[in-house]
Image (cartoon, rainbow, N blue to C red; front, side):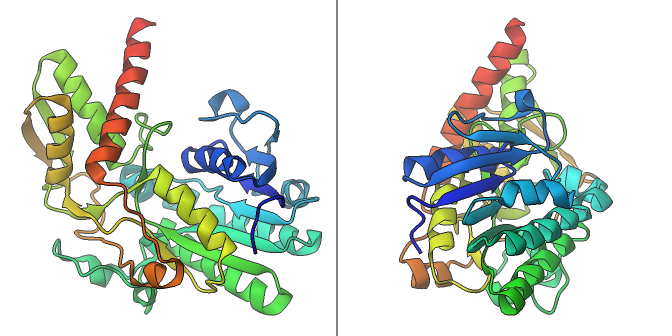
Length: 329
């Protein structure tokens, strides 16, 4: 199913990925008619023009029905989430997103929506397979037997099953992508919900501008991750939605780095070298996580490929510009 010309709604459009997705879809000729988020418009990361921008709490079913009315495709990215610090300390809030996903699926079914995209997460994967920094890349089947990230991961895995059964029982075609650590400009970089790439950029900028060349790193810095630049995320999201991939699939970079190496990259971009202090009691998540891209290469002939160094340079530049604006106020 090619989405060009089809009327679609994007849920969570005021967020980082959702805002970029609206722009990308419209650039590809997709008719985005409705963008929805719970945040006030002045808190959206991007406010698209020529789109019906609605401020609605999608945990309420009536608001989901308003969102689904008159569209053929729904991109469901709305969720209460953030970086590891937020996820580990707000498990109940994260799990409440199950209301949004359930009510959006019900509204999509009742409104005659033809295709439903759900943004899942690598947090669904069995924690026993992520204890070693030298992690074996995670295959889609590694989500079972189920032992996901407590709170956020369980909610994502449950919602994946909801999509599966709404397709089986009601014929609502669903596509599910498991996002792996998405980063880039126009996202959260301070306040407690930011993820590692943005947090490290901010910390390096602060250390450089203050002249105090020190940085605090959560954990021992040896934990490993892959990070996907936002442009790869939006491209992959559309491709998966249009595809015949009927099971959850990884959408992430396979370029594995330690957190220490991520700091190395940002230091090199900034032209500084910092003394590192390790906060061993801070939330740090699993020891190792990487995306096995065998299936997406097989199905799409493509995988996320933007180099971490290139994406981090753009992210650093944008965060630095935001901090300079803030300093002038």
